[in-house]
Amino acid sequence: MKPTLIQLLTTVALTFSGFMVPSLAKSNDVAQIKALEQSFQDAVRAKDPVAIMKLYAPGDQLFVFDVVPPRQYAGFDAYKKDWEDTIAMFDGPVTFELTDLVITTDGHGLAYSHSIQHLTGRMKGADAIDVTVRVTDVYKKIGGKWLIVQEHASVPVDLETGKPDLQSKP
Amino acid sequence: MKPTLIQLLTTVALTFSGFMVPSLAKSNDVAQIKALEQSFQDAVRAKDPVAIMKLYAPGDQLFVFDVVPPRQYAGFDAYKKDWEDTIAMFDGPVTFELTDLVITTDGHGLAYSHSIQHLTGRMKGADAIDVTVRVTDVYKKIGGKWLIVQEHASVPVDLETGKPDLQSKP
Image 1: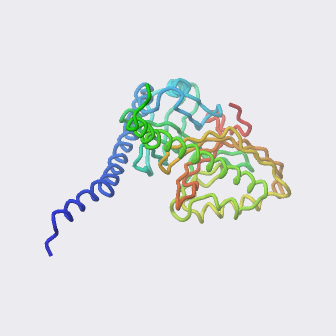
Image 2 (image 1 turned 45 degrees about the vertical axis):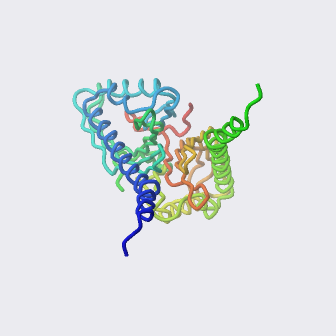
Image 3 (image 1 turned 135 degrees about the vertical axis):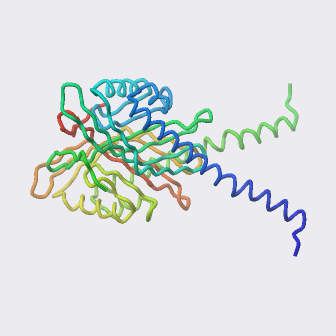
């Protein structure tokens, strides 16, 4: 049976308002956040704190628990200084690889992910460093662009022995 | 000048569609998530893993980076076992306090928070434990109820000395 015009129009309207658009929007969001994390990986490899900080939300919107002390970084400027200090500590090149990235979004301007980030390099006046970090990121679409609003980076610690596991495996 | 009926109706419509309802929904969401974290605090104090796990999303929706090894817990059952094992390690009462809770929601079924969680107690056959943990939670409204879908708990670690800071301060 041939559909009537009204049936066709209803189908088109439902498809675009209720189903297609959110799922397309979600896959676009995920692609944009993947690109953000690719830019992050490139910026760390380039030891470029300015490029790194372009991926974070400005002002008080940003909150971070970093892998190293202190407890927390509240706001963009505090975390910018943390990245500048971290990059300055490295002597020579670093290797950096972001893997196991899983992104979830609700299609409404908020998203989150978890990933594993492996960093090696030589610290000035200290030993080589080789650390596998677990990272949680929360992203918000601000002015049409996805930015990180909250980050939590860490290594697991055995609380009975007091020893961190710098090479944690799944 | 007295407003016309159409002006009044327009104001009412705008108020409810564009401003009032989302902000009311957001404050309801925040109140419900605060209640969830209150229940979490009560359940840890009661050393009740069943009550704790009622606050987490079922099945594969849950993903956790815990403070202790291993690297990650994928899925509800894996994290349930982690909580059961953790609770079983304590000998006698624990003290537990959740503070500095900051919740953000987009008003569309996704939310996130950061908090500080302070735990003390005595481990079986081991020393007393006293640890301040940093926690990131991501929440999703599933079947009308907010549940934790992703959690990241950690203590900061000095990567140069290899020492964790179990009593981190802001």
